[in-house]
Image 1: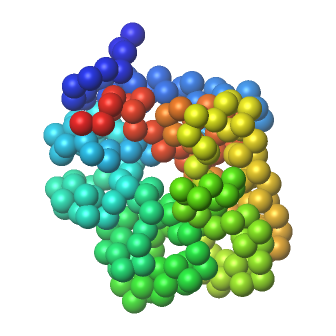
Image 2 (image 1 turned 30 degrees about the vertical axis):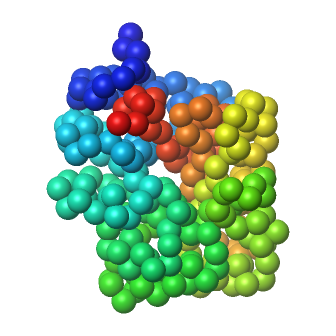
Image 3 (image 1 turned 90 degrees about the vertical axis):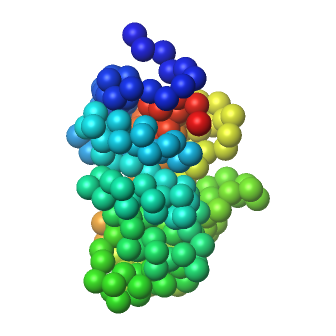
Length: 235
C-alpha cells in the first residue's frame, strides 16, 4: 500500500490514493444512509507545482481545487480541461476573475458577495456553481456567514433570486470525530431549513478535508476537499 510521504507523487500514486480514498468515503456515506453516488472529491492542488497537477489529470483526477485566484490562474491556463473549484476565500475585487476561471466557487461568505458574483456571472455569460460558506462554530479566524444570518430574510431572498447550489463549511482544526460530525450535522440541518424557507433545492454540501473527510461524508457531504491524502505534504 502506498504511504503518503515527502516528495512529488507520480501519476500512479495519485490514482491509487484517490481511488482508495473514494472507495472508503463512499462506503462511509452508504453506511450512514447517504447516497454514495453523489459524493465527489475535489483534489486540492494549492502550492503543488504544475507537474504534479498534470500528473493528477493524467491519472484521471480532473476535479481540482485551488485556494487563491492568483495561484490558480497559471494552472488553469495550462490545464483548462480540468474542472476547477475555488475553495479558498474570495475577495470581492477578484470576483470577476474567479467567475471567468472556476466551474464552482465554494466560498461565498456574504449576501453582498453572492449578489455581486451572480451579477458578474450574468455579464460574463458564465455559470459557475455557487456555495454559501457558513462559519458554523463562529471562529474568529474563519470566514463565512454566521448561522443566524443564513436564515435571515435578506439571505432567503437572495437565495431565491440567485439560486446557489448549496453550503460549505470548515470544521475547527484538531476537532475530534464527535466534534467534527456535530459541525457537519449542523450545516446539513441548516441547509434543510434554508431549502424549506427559500423553497428551492440546495443539493450540495461542501464539507470535510483530509483530517475529517469520513466525518463529513457520514453527515451527508457531497463534495470533500482533499489535498494531503492525495498529494502528500505541500511542496
